[in-house]
Image (cartoon, rainbow, N blue to C red; front, side, top):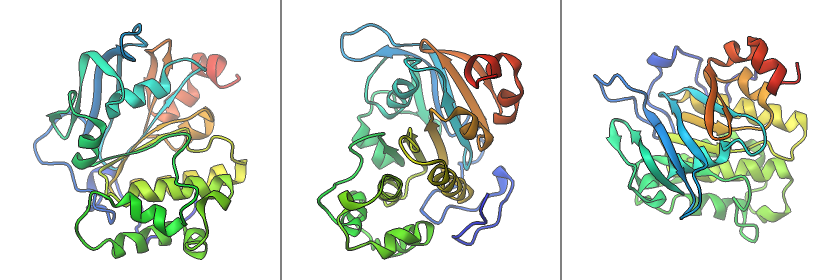
Length: 266
């Protein structure tokens, strides 16, 4: 993967400094992961359960990836963690605090950033205006964070005065991720960040995601490109029909014969 363009050297997960985007080290003495959706069962509104005792979790500065077949509940699990559907049993905890009943807006204030797969930018606004919109909850000077986003995605600085809707698909995804980083999140949640982009752009986006994690921000990501996503994952979750089918490190899942046969094309 590419060397970090934001000046940080790779470190062991537990030794990373506070992130340049504002992520903070986990509070001392805690034994559970920084973010966990714990045995979540639930669905949308009064509809049937889509998730069935599903658990996903991610620690500070780590990358957790959710993969599985179409209709497996991957994006639903992500939305449950972010508060976009009813969790009828189980819980969501952030830094040891139960946030199961909080709205998505309240979770953003707690340090969670979410990038949906579609409709994730303001197409009529410029790149820079999109980034400014991302800082809507902040009252301090955002110039430093914006400079860091431009360091991470240099093409956005070049096109900062261009309408975001005129950008390529990969550049739009960079705007969406950059806008989420403007909130200085402790957790960044990405729903299919490489959907519809070329393999070259996918690799570039994954490089940038690794760089963000190196700053201490936790990454929880849903991906259809399972093999490539598991290659960068500290932890991987394979969901089937809303349930945990396989869990392990990215390397373990890539080497698992059952996972390879069923979900990775052999």
